[in-house]
Image (cartoon, rainbow, N blue to C red; front, top):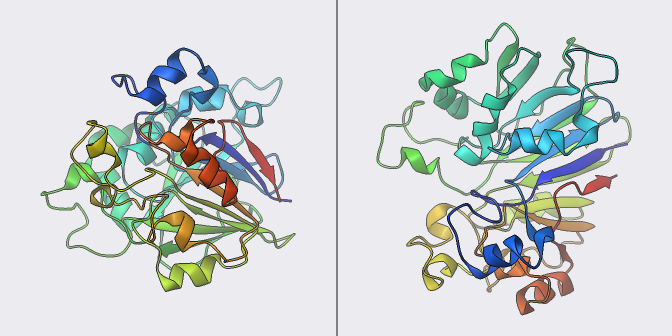
Length: 309
């Protein structure tokens, strides 16, 4: 049995964002606090006892407190059911939460060498002593089985694959710690339970849907997919920024080349948007955008949503 908990569904800054007065953030602070969401991450388990995080958001401490499945076991002075963290990119949204896991519990970080190079280049991540926190490289299109904290097999199989996107924004115009451009800055994951054969896909960032991606996702029981913006020029039109979704490495939900249209007709069992920006009107339950997404079979989850396959 494969269990997935949505720890957070929002893009960088969360909902409401600390310095934002847009319609969604105002509504989340006042009339509809249920709109509040932390930054995107999930937890996955094959046995319900040992868990792996996919990305470690800046809100991780809050997310762990709010998620009973990830609490220490009763009677233990120091314990965590978290066996590892799998990173799909090197953005702040994905790595900053690692700093909240510095209290000595053993776990492993699984990431592409390009992302591990970013961690090595910033000495603040040395608070995660490699005596307790192993850093294990993963490669594009090479499956692996993450291990439990005692080294035993987890029963999960993870296949990383390249996704159209961009490197971390804070490295724009700077030399990448791993050298010249190469695959690995933005990954999607296929995560399967070896015992039951159930699986799902996780893509927190994706700039466009390619034919290869369609063939991967076709017939999948569950897909978590990049839902950052509703329309490509959303931030600009709202006066909230000067970048398009594409300029940030994210596909829009709507439009002829958007996620909803591009992934239609692939017989995906359950389609869930993640990494949803506070500017996105689809967050509002009564909006036309929300209705359009739901009519197309997409779900916008709340923090704490659990899905069992």
